[in-house]
Image (tube, rainbow, N blue to C red; front, side, top):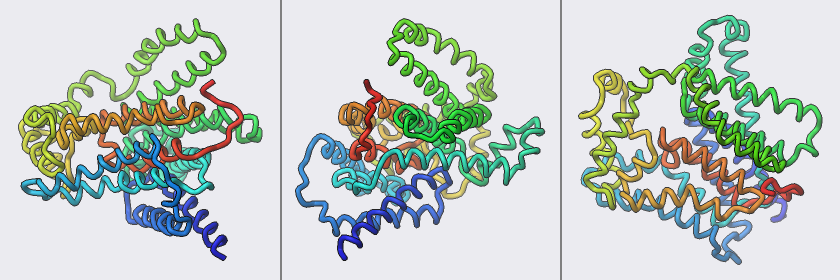
Length: 409
């Protein structure tokens, strides 16, 4: 009886994790909170049923997740010493994924978890979201005939799915997922599945091109050329690979020049520039240990009023109870915890490359690159991206797929 209950909980935990992965593309809502609760609650039941604490031994992977746990702990500890901890509760809520997944990383998922399930879920969720927007919310004929289809799609996507930062990030994970699945399982895939991957990839790239998000489009271009370079390098065409390294920046420059938000005017009026300038001015005052999460936010709010444009000031006044951060994970972390915090953040991003199995090293590098680059332009592990990042990191480090072919060779 106990064995059947444990098996049922194992499958429920896996199912809730897959639903959580798929739902992450959507804006955070009460439904997503329920999914998160079900996932962690079933894991808690599983933890006691399987007595996961028995026979545990600490290795480098466990130490990595202890570092993540320590990074999380800095937030509530600093909150105890903040002068006016008005932001502590809100900022802590954004970091609970660090706490939850650091514990899961130490004790592990059940053996039903396979990373290919989650990559397929990401691809399917991305495809369904695009089809839902184009066919149901916009209409195919309207999308095709409207000369302002880019603006139409972006506005509709923001209303019904999510903002461009999360949506485009999700599409880029989908591109990595397709590359990984195709590279490893193409011999096992049916012909119809193989024939779908190419048009789906093209669709994702097109949506990224018409998006207002520059970072997502840039990431897609770099990933695409990385896939080509990896394939050419594996075929022992080293001269061609080196030539690609030289030509890639030139090709990227040409593609970027045609993007709608790569004009000089768009770049010089980018609000992130004064947000970063404000953050740097705060960091200069306490560069070693920082201010703590609430004090750092207060100091940043004061500094921002000195550098922000009048247009941004008027716009920000319309936002109620919204915390305006530096839109840069590295700067925000340094404001909060100084250089000490920044070093921990870099360890959280970089250390998995040394811990992951050899056959997943390239995959992990692409994923870590995507996340660390994205962190330049938005809050990441202490923001809306934390859940998907740590979920996939745990999967990369703690699960096995039993691949016959090793992509690192």
